Image (cartoon, rainbow, N blue to C red; front, side):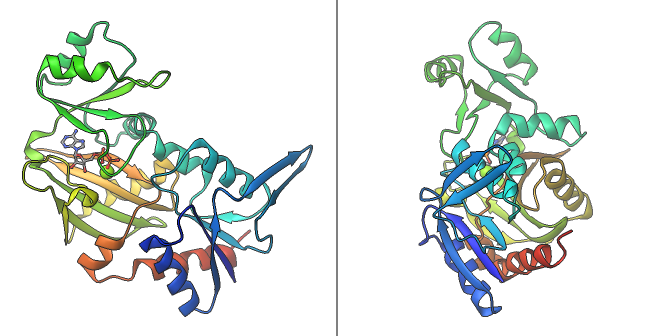
Length: 290
Ligand SMILES: Nc1ncnc2c1ncn2[C@@H]1O[C@H](COP(=O)(O)OP(=O)(O)O)[C@@H](O)[C@H]1O
Ligand SMILES: [Mg+2]
């Protein structure tokens, strides 16, 4: 089988691991450079240049550099009849943190209270509804903890509001204080939990991202957490998803759904072969294509 890994950087751990496991399993596995692919559309026809046409399935690994451009690429591949793992719609839903909150809350999944604002009008009321200061400020898109702030006082909020990206807005979110800088990352593959770890923030930070020095430890999760994660992946439309969950003493909340979740720390912490499970699922998808 021909398996392409869509990436702008073939030296990334996840890309190397997928290629390695694909080859061990006997598949022709290679990277496809995101920026080299050129999409072409005319009436009733979609094609692509600089793209191996006999590719059976594409696995996008486009995490941090994901732009509308790569979503368009995935959509184009789907139009060409090529299988993708994950698809454009799921990737797009996950990329926009507010859209994720909208879809999850509508589906009855527990999320922190979240606001999207484009300006300062009536802000006092929103802060009240979020439970008062501190609140968490987030950009609409982003990952690895970038641009995520704990806003403790009004002046910090006003200072940050100077940086609202034009045409985008920023997210203000209820701060789940009792989460204690800890979150749970649940890795879902095709409606099943492949593995889970708990991540703890470095001293002095409230963000537990591995890229910021947060460290992962394998955990067993209860069935409620498992169900929340699986349902979230389904609602967002992802076959492969990294679901971030935080807890306080009463509730669990989904804070983010990642469409291109890293698994270096997860493989290290849990000893599981996540890359192989992803390849196995890609093969299953091609073999069971309708
Ligand atoms: N509402 C919140 N309350 C408490 N901690 C939070 C909240 N939102 C995010 N965090 C912390 O910040 C980290 C990064 O936030 P997240 O929304 O996952 O953005 P990113 O895409 O940058 O990972 C989370 O893993 C969590 O540790
Ligand atoms: Mg996150």
